[in-house]
Length: 317
Image (tube, rainbow, N blue to C red; front, side, top):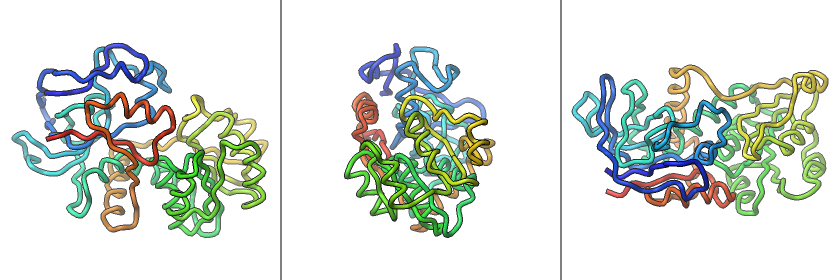
């Protein structure tokens, strides 16, 4: 079967299409005929050899890819069903992938497979973050990287909760997308003085969703009022925001890190995200699709900030 293999860590070009051995399901596993594979920023860091945690580095050669969607193709109780599944970080960039049967999530009939895959990781992350933040009507919420996969969902979720949404992004088309999704205020954080612009347009904020980290995340932290919530979940800048417990205490801000949970809790969040989208209450934004053989181009586009919303690999049939 065809897959994308990494044999050394480095630039996007180390991702090479290749013929590999067919995968086989073990006990309590199934084989999925992949239609779409999720591509994440973290996977670009793993490919480069610089993941957030060293334990995320695979033994090479390897096939990257954590989230896929397609049809169960082997003889099992799931055979023929449309599903999405997480793969523990390996094996998604391929025509077929092995998943634990317990990890399978059925895709509602009303939902397109590309939308389901787009929501598998980002949907559960956004819903978990929203739960941590205690969103309610009348609060002011700042969403960093609002044109990205998680950011576009957070804008919608916060808006639906009745919050006032301030969206930060670095390109006009991303700011326009955030406005289309319901943001009340949009600010280009690639411009000097963006923090002053946020203060002028929105005042102090109650919640910050920090997907950028670094200096941007720290500056966004400084916009929070006393009693606010800082919810970091990403490090697109290359490092997490340097918000220490001492700084948070002095600022009277609660830090609620990450969007984790037990496998069962994460699966339930993903099911909820798919159900919300199927009901028309949540809109996944798939900004670009690349064929499986073009995985290197997908990684390069993400790294150079050329993408909007979610990036997927498609598997031709």
